[in-house]
Length: 475
Ligand SMILES: Nc1ncnc2c1ncn2[C@@H]1O[C@H](COP(=O)(O)OP(=O)(O)O)[C@@H](O)[C@H]1O
Ligand SMILES: [Mg+2]
Image 1 (tube, rainbow, N blue to C red):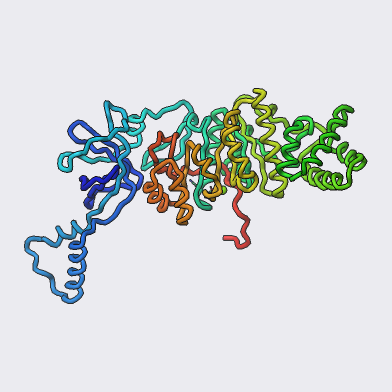
Image 2 (image 1 turned 60 degrees about the horizontal axis):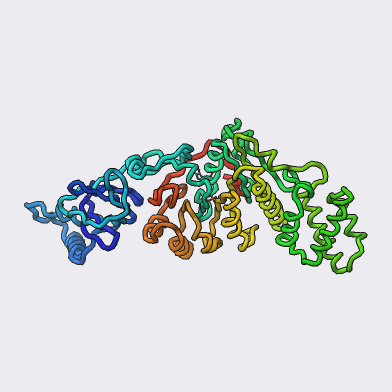
């Protein structure tokens, strides 16, 4: 490979038959003691007008005469080589100074003298000084094993996006499993009831995290006592998930206080009180209708109930909130309660920081709440990973705070536009690479890869894959 030209931070390299590089590969350009790192992001034919005319002429000649052309100097094969030349478009990422990457690339490598070679991931990591204590093996980059470090997800906002069936949930399960193995606590809002599969291997035996993965279903494993939830969490739920008017909420908490004083606070006691309480009929209607939703959700129990701090024993745990089979209202109630309770516990330092994985969060979290989760909750110690196939469902305010993006394939132009504008890498790279990414491969961008985008083939999983759509026609 040789350098052909440079425009801005972009180099064009010419490649002959045997030179090969895939989109996303890193190359090292060495020129008399200096070197720079570039990344291939696109590949094209070498095309000039005269070359195209040549090709057309030859085709015309071939088509009109069956005889072999007289070519004693073997010019034909030479010109075929030229026609097969390819251009690699590459972005200049960094210079190498004293064995370390530096961002100032103010020199121009020689077209004649400089040598271009592929840079192995290991060499790149060494140049970057990318290392850590808690590795998360993701799969392969090129033909080398590739891992990121849990430290780079810790305290960070991560987005996993890509079109349907591209492998987002698979990657997210891999992250959850490894985080738990490293002793972290993870809460997952699961819309397809699929993360429960982390408990089992595909061959039916128990997975290494079997005992540390809890599946909580609203109304079944996940029932909370009113007392444990506290007034603030319930108030948030009434307001945000059940649209309870302020006047009715006030009455509700008058009843709450009254029962609490009598030490008989419970879901049934509230029901009785709502019916007999001396209030305006409109307010009573509002209370009764909400009360029925609350009761039928079975989210609250008077006896015992789930306690997050008890579930979070040393050694790590994943709490999977299965929301595949419950209604939208119950989803919103659940999310509201779980998040408020977790923030409450974190505020009181009753639990360590936790990782939150939210699948398709726009389906159960108000948009205004997202920013809250990201900014305020991050402050308390809730570190979120959003998983979505709708990049435009996430607001720009959130993209501005994102630390890591795992980008799977998008072919739809409007999705590509969106993601290339907001992602942490330059839009040429994102557009070109993401458009042609095969299923199960992603472009990792941001902190976890030290801001040098890497194409990763995500490893297959040993754990059971649940959550596949039920089909009528069996294969
Ligand atoms: N790296 C991978 N290796 C093996 N199977 C995978 C991989 N990634 C995804 N799959 C499988 O492909 C299907 C779709 O993946 P999934 O993660 O559910 O897609 P998404 O969440 O993006 O819609 C699933 O059946 C999953 O098990
Ligand atoms: Mg999914």
